[in-house]
Amino acid sequence: MSVMTIPRVLREKLGEDGVDALLAVFSEVSLNTRTDLATKSDIKDMATKSDIKDMATKSDLKDMATALRQEMATKEDLLRLEAKLELKIESMNTQIEKSGKENIKWMLAFAATQVGILIAAMGLMFKFFIK
Image (cartoon, rainbow, N blue to C red):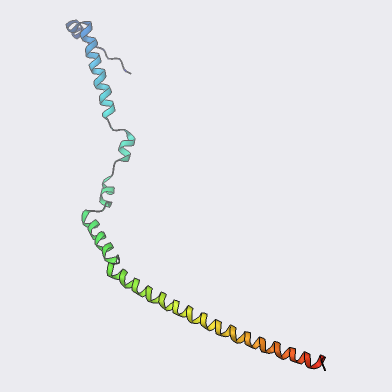
């Protein structure tokens, strides 16, 4: 901190108490002024003219909002999509039911064939061994 020298004429006019009060005022003003000044980091953080040029204007934002609204699906679009999905799900459920019935039919056919083969094999065994 630098030392401030008060001229002799002022010291004589103000007196020691006046000089001390004046120095206190100067000191306080000096401290307040230093805290109000921008620092190097404050200046670095400030936007430059090119930064401001790059910012979107209200018109730009409105245009972007309009474009987004046009790309968004409407309620009608969603309802149509839901209806299509319901039809697809119903169609798949019908196919699953049909394939289940078809599987049962084939299982019964194979079971009947196996029973027939088993009866034929037992008949042959009885014919050869019981003779």
